[in-house]
Length: 167
Image (cartoon, rainbow, N blue to C red; front, side):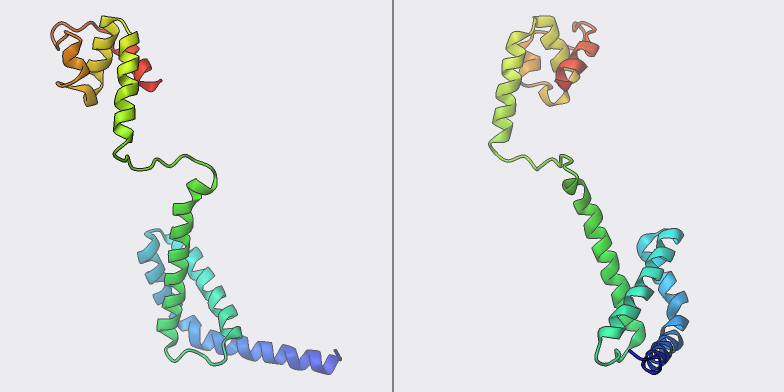
């Protein structure tokens, strides 16, 4: 590439940059307000507006003709950026291997009840009462009523019950 071609290319880039600034820079305050509305944070809004402008400049270089409505197109770029960020934050825990609980299906409650019944069978009557009285899922029906303890007669074993419920 000769120096004349290099200067010609630099002139084209400068002209393209100037057209971008003339068309899209006046929209920056409106874009910032829109991004602030989406993010609810001035710092995130500023970052998002900056990234939107950068993406818009790169995308315009690829397009064959400029958009007919620059404001609407720029806001669409910001909306798509916001959607992508929201999806990434939602998918982030699963990507790092964090356990995301699944909704219970019809078969799972039975397995839980069976496991709880097995656990309760191995506990002393006082421990059963403590577990049953401290766990609202077992209240009035089921294990709590089978233990023979009620709210007035149960022993103070909530610490034991909390440990057993965690296990």
